[in-house]
Image (tube, rainbow, N blue to C red):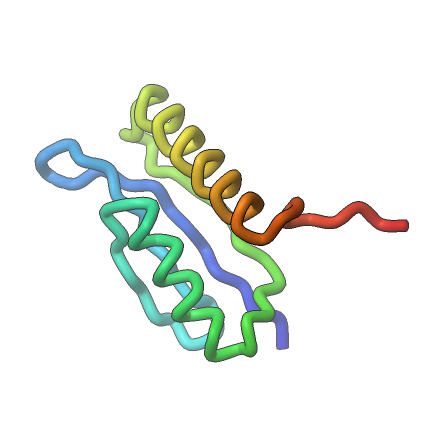
Length: 96
C-alpha cells in the first residue's frame, strides 16, 4: 500500500492562505493555517504509517496569487533548513 498525501494551497474568505492536507489512504483532511501546523499534521498523519510516506503531491487552487506561493516556498525552505540544522545534515542523502 502506497502512502500518499496531497497538499493543496488554498485561500480562505479573508484572503489568507492555508494548506489542505489529505491522507489519500483513509481520506483524513486537515486545514493548516501555518507551516508549523502543516509540519505537525504531516508528522501526525505519517506516524500512523511508521513515518514512511511514499509521496506528497502538491497542488494549488487557481485563485492563489504568486506572492502567496513565494511566501510558502520561503517558509518551506526555512523549515527545511531548521530540520537539517537540528539533524546535522541534509534531509535527502545522495545515493552512493
